[in-house]
Amino acid sequence: MRRLPLAALLSCCIATPALAAGKFSDLEKCYQRHGQVEEVQKDGKKITTYKSEGDVAVECNEKVVAKAKGEKDLKNVNELATIVGRNWNWQSAVPVYVEGAKKNKAVCKEKDALYAIDLALSSPKDHMHSTSALAFLGACWPENKDAVVALLKEDANSYHKEHLCAFLNGKKALPANKQALCKAG
Image (cartoon, rainbow, N blue to C red; front, side, top):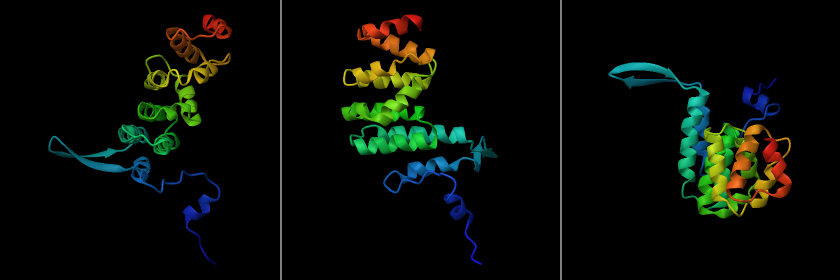
């Protein structure tokens, strides 16, 4: 009887992100380093540390955003953002889209970017996710006017409404049919 390796058995039943086969595979692999024990030198002493998933994600996210700076190719921006979204969370992918939008306004219309923005706007006012989302909206204005207005929904949470109402009021672009949402906010 032939025995299959555990990875082969699990591949049928558990969704695992496939590693990017292209030029960003090193960034994809970066996220796999959590849970590792690492020895470092500090003040001349050897210290054993543990790489938590959160620490690794912050480190890897920074590397992905750095790679996105100056990236003009829409496909590459989407691939970089997908690496963050798939390995950590989509709100953390927003800075990738911000960098991409600076070089290529087509990023502003990407459905995954708008999905990430929608999620990020649900964060408190000074949170890094909402700050990045508002930077994206600013970088993509007026290309995304209709999409931004569409994000302001009746069932949106209070942070979401607060961010969008302030943004649209600041642009003097809050439609009459959405004004009641902002007042109820």
